Image 1 (cartoon, helix red, strand yellow):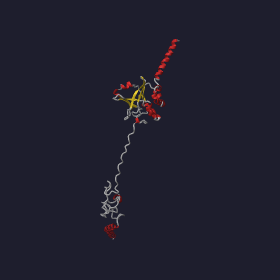
Image 2 (cartoon, helix red, strand yellow):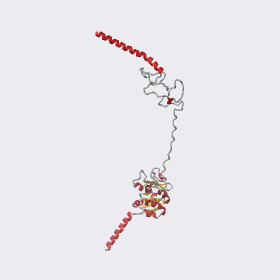
Image 3 (cartoon, one colour):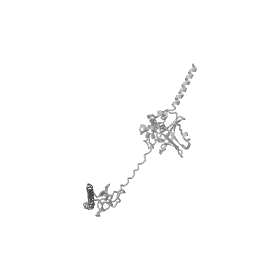
Length: 306
């Protein structure tokens, strides 16, 4: 009977030991012993992050005091959780282990990275020990500042949990709500180029590349804008050497111009007369040729009939 009781007692001790290992620490009770971290501790409870921390076997918490934690309190709840999870490293690091890091710099994986909501290197911390011995933390995002310095070790239980105090919250660029998130680049307003001067009102200005400057009118008078007043040549019209605003040039139409069957509608009256005179001989010649052809045909018909 006595041996049976001893066996039961031994089993209870083993179960108690296993239970203590499964709940190696309680971050809320641990930080509750330090009033300087009450704001940070409350934020861990409000965002339910404390429960996830307590389920871990090995963890490092980078805590900020009440003054620095006020910057996190002003953020939206969803952003608060992301920022706080950046302060939870998924490994055990105390001051001695950080001192022993090779090359005095390394990347640390945070709970934010394990959440699946981090992009690029947003869920990693960059730790560096400077040449002056100061240890600094910052987001591993390119261009993010490393301006959160390690102040002191608050508590440690090797190799389950380590709580280190840092000087400022660590907010990766892209999460927002803090100066650490990176200010947007200044908006450089490009100076708008001055509009090109129009041809109107600037006498002697060169014409556009695709247009030819019109020739001056025969009268020699200048007035108005030559580019605005002169009508453009018709798509099928003759190619002029320099048309005036009122009609074709004095040289008359070229060989490819209108036929002799009729002048254009815009031609002046004196030009029309000269064109009719020039066309008269050719019309008479065509009448004579037609009459001669008919006479020959009549003669041949008469001979055949006879």
